[in-house]
Length: 263
Length: 366
Image 1 (cartoon, rainbow over the protein chains, first blue to last red):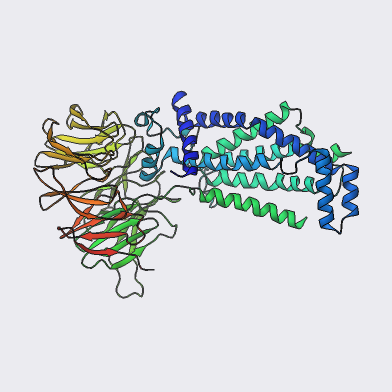
Image 2 (cartoon, each protein chain N blue to C red):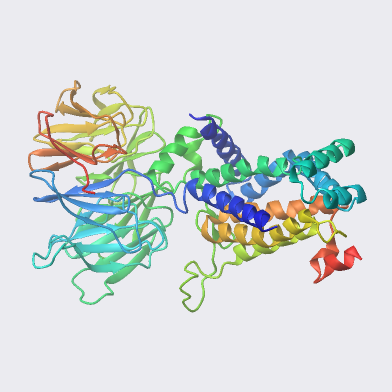
């Protein structure tokens, strides 16, 4: 078994253990598993938020702005000076990216564990039976109940429409829209205000607020709805975490809210 | 700024690609389906259904649907020699395909003569054909019943909702249809009234029951072979074995032959479930159902070995060892035993004579 397979296998076993514990509801198992992941990565997310805030503050720092103007045409010198300021202020420019990078394998592993657990082909079922630990009675668990609310978690979600729309073959994509909205809300809430019109970090965050909801919405539209349940739960927990830390920037949700906040 | 935007888009695209590569929308990779008539073998392998001439292993045609459907059920034959096969993927279409090619056309292709696409899930099971009536189980828990004698597109005459995932080919005794389900049930359907009698089993069932003398014999994932009285659904006997039984048993002269996932091959008396002979331990797990070849039992193991066993013996002979896993049920085609290795880079289908000598192997034309 490759290290990746082992990693996914841990996810599968955890998911199925929760599934078995709560009376065989795969949707609730995914939600609880997401909460577990969020709890485990809570310090990482907190560190990411603090780091992002520090980077944002730095963009408004007069010394930082001054060196950007001074060395605008000397990229190498600018980079050296930026690193000096990072060092002086104790900022690690990569620490805001690291938690995101750590979460990527989690997303991939969760996607695989959802599809592996639901085992929609004979081969997938065979692989599943061989990856489950002896602490679980596989025979009693199979087949997994993939129904949750109106969804089949092993298939892309959609509410049937009374008429045919060619590009919505699965029906009206409620979950994909909720995923896009919650991703947008989460990204906007965590965007600190910026007074610097040349703030590249703020501009990047602005782009992320557009692209990430579209990307995750597309995932939710095309991949098994179990993944969409993960995204929504994760987003809502993220929003809750930022709110609990007092970092949520609610005014960003209003049209022009970011500008108002920066005045 | 433009560079940053480009970088962001690239990172997100890479993320999308990685996630897509982590299994795809619907996991479609599984072992191939196989069937044969007097002339051709038909191999359902991924997005392609191949027709392969039995006499020399040459490709006759390769069929792919416009929707890039995936095929892995064993094809079935209609009374007029057409193929029936369901697909998985986005459209989940059930096809009837005329395998005869039109010689007057350049690059002739088999013709889809009818299709049905209202099922809600994958077609994993092989349909059962009784005259003009087709009983097609779907993973959505329904048996779709078609009457092929009806002209026009709508040949669906009934749908029997059973629930659970139906992956096994049904069996019949002429009066009833026996349908196994992954949700631990065996459904017995009266062919006239479509009344359903459901037997609760201890585990999921993926194999086709063997039927004889008013009894259905079925192996389940709770490591037991069970004999069920067809008339009332009562359990006649249950024999525990060492591991899960994946494929259906073969019933020959009152003896049931089947394997389990731990790699044991059993021979039980159908009358009482007692061991006829001690079980055999070949070289790997057994998922496929055995077949009867000239009065001998042929079975395959996951480790790629094809075994032949004399009736009344528990000393099998290894006919051939392939460098690939075998999960698909072997098929007898004339004098040849056809075996479909799984994910073999060199061949998709191997034909062996009854001594185990390889007659040909099939590699698709590019």
